[in-house]
Image (tube, rainbow, N blue to C red; front, top):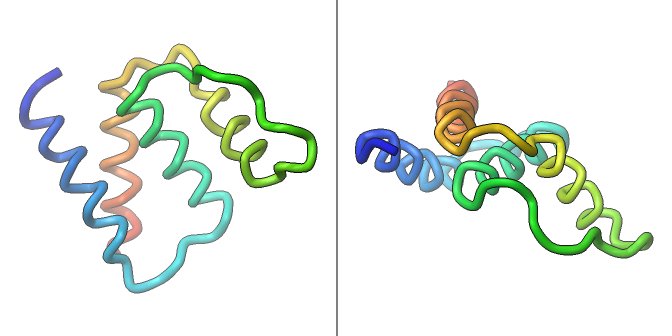
Length: 86
């Protein structure tokens, strides 16, 4: 991973907290999944319980990205954050 990509990824993770609006739920799940895939790689751990709706949605969003290279997830994350800045 290049230092430039890593610094852009870190910068995007700061910028997402400074948006002037709250993205819709689908976009929030995409942001979460790309961030986790970019920072940790493929999903690990157990699937949340049946009544943990938010945890299950996050799990499923991240699990869909299994096999996506971390650098690719970082680039997608950066692009998504930039598109939300307007």
